[in-house]
Image (cartoon, rainbow, N blue to C red):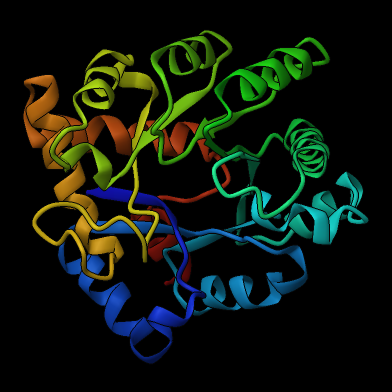
Length: 267
């Protein structure tokens, strides 16, 4: 079994075939999915997807691209929305200095708001960080001084220092199909060296489809190719990757129930 802990099933690429997307994931052995919120004001759409399928869960949060739009939403509101039984994570939130669709100050404020919600709820924060290693690490260190919180650096493409120091702070690191691309040796080396008990795999679908589907619309079933790439990089079996990353997921996302438990509860 594999888990895709970060995909965007509410995006328009999946509107016409959502049931097929979930069915193909299950057929591929990807039994648990988390569909990720990017705008709290559109959270109802994300939640509706999770409510439709027993083994699809969701998060609640504001992507850094949209941070300036939702600075009026405080941690208490995120905590309130996270009480829904299908919400197993906070975010995604963080810093993106590549596009800068929102101001750096707004992104930082939103990041800290989401950290506060993760700290209060105990739900893991899905952290988006791009071209912002130094500021991301500075905020993580500063906020950890105020109290630990669970989190994962999702779709990691940053440098070694941030990844390893985040692990030291108790965070997890997640790898996407990018590790299957050519000319990503520095990232592959990080994927090799992060402790196996702190690694997750994801698709970030509909983006970043792994080889052999690169350039196509990504979907959760394709996380098997990311897991296979990780196995090759680390010199272990695909089964070992599946077992480790699945165990890591349910340790970190403790509110999510494994499929067998969910099925038994429904009987």
